[in-house]
Image (cartoon, rainbow, N blue to C red; front, side):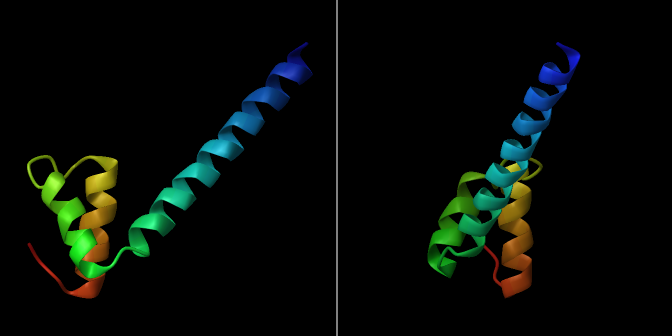
Length: 65
């Protein structure tokens, strides 16, 4: 039973990592205007994970709100 549980938890973790990578890739693929729209949503709370990813990408592209 412990092996099954560990296998299930491992699979869940792998899927979470894959989902996060897909979210990051989606944000990176946004056009600059769309990225600015996303960042505008998170400007009040930039310390959220999505806000951090959006602002990091804006920094890479050298764009600001």
